[in-house]
Image (cartoon, rainbow, N blue to C red; front, side):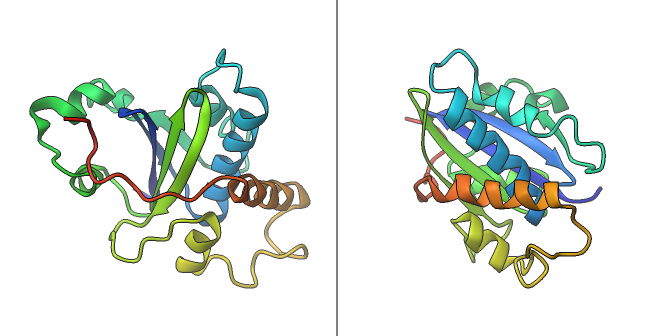
Length: 183
């Protein structure tokens, strides 16, 4: 099925989960960094949800095969309802294991229209790579392939990548929650 990646947005334990297909490394930093940069610049008024900026960072890029959908679009029910239903996911780690993933997670915490912080997690949960740069280094995508004279990426793609890293660098790196919902 290809690279599968989830973005988990925590609005004070109101969780939204987005499934991202064909997203990994360079593309994750580009797409997610673009959404964060645009939300930080234009979303603080609260009139537009982070979801709009997230989806906007994926659309209109025909050369990249990235796809995004809300997890509840995949017949899973409404995010919070299926997460808390019967409290079957006792820990955040247990919740992540349930998701169809093979290339990592972005956990993003938002309070009152402000991004509090983020962390990247890998699918094994052992070598957690919290920052965007650590995520790239852990997966060995960061090596000499991502430079200004890289082959395989055009100048616009490289600029989007470096802009994404900059957007992440302006945020706090936080630890993921222990639990997925409040008791």
